[in-house]
Image (cartoon, rainbow, N blue to C red; front, side):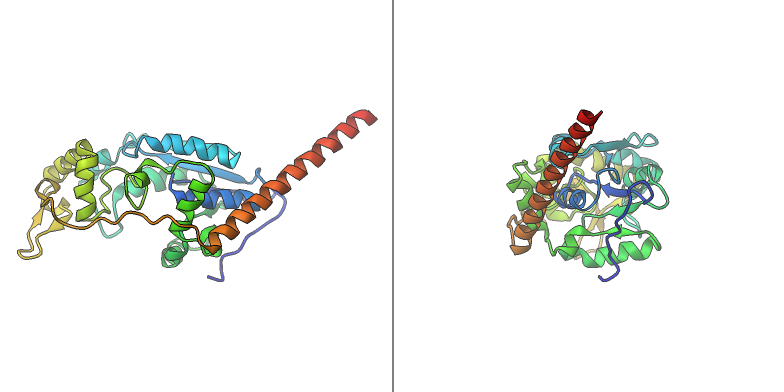
Amino acid sequence: MTDIRFIKGDARHLPRIVSRFSCGAASAVATKLILGEYSAERVHILRAWIKEEHEDNDRFSADCETWFGHPITVLRDTKYGASVIEVFKRKRYLKGQMGAPCRKALKGDVLEAAGLPDDIWVIGFTAEEEDRASELMDTNNGRKMLFPLIERGLKKADTLAMIERAGIALPAMYLLGYNNNNCKCCVKGGEGYFNRQRIDFPENFVALADVQESIGPGAFLFRDRETGERYSLRNLPPNKGRHDEPEISCSFFCAMAEQEMAHDLSEKRTKNVKNCESSMSQRQLL
């Protein structure tokens, strides 16, 4: 991906570097790496809070804020009460050709409202997601983006391991065995995923099934493979689907990235000491 480049310079005259922090492990590692590349004045970390996220996300966000040494600005939708269920009720569909409406309503629109036209986005796509990165750039023609994980060859398993090795407990969704830190009962999930969600988050499962049934069969996510008939989550057979737990391992690229972060931290500490000594010398001269 040769068109991904870092743009450096005087923070007073250059566009903001905006990390769209999702409370996922990949997003956290991408943000940490970017903070080592750019001056803190240029970097802005934005998080769009959603009601159906796991409550542990707030803890993870606070831990990451400490790890970053940089504040996270938490944004919240007001039109739908930051609720996925409310979006579905009012939009009258769960998934369309452009995906689920909740993503745009509760994240995309909220982050856009807080953005500036020349912001450079930091996206936490991993090495497995180069196609997604290319697609995102194609659909946002002219927008400058940074993909620090792809540039360093870091995979999802690397980012999970790096969070643990930094002494931060992974978000609860990973610890429960899910591959992503998505909202509870995310409509992107398959049959095996929803059978797990029915056990882990029964209230959210029932709430989504209720919305499906209030909209009608067009909102049903799955269909019988033999008859072709769609059915609601409430009628999902308990033995349907499979669910794989996330892999957590630190590759060679992971170790390299950790060395880079440690080097960046050491440089910043040295710079702070020098600035402090310079300031003290100036005061003595005065």
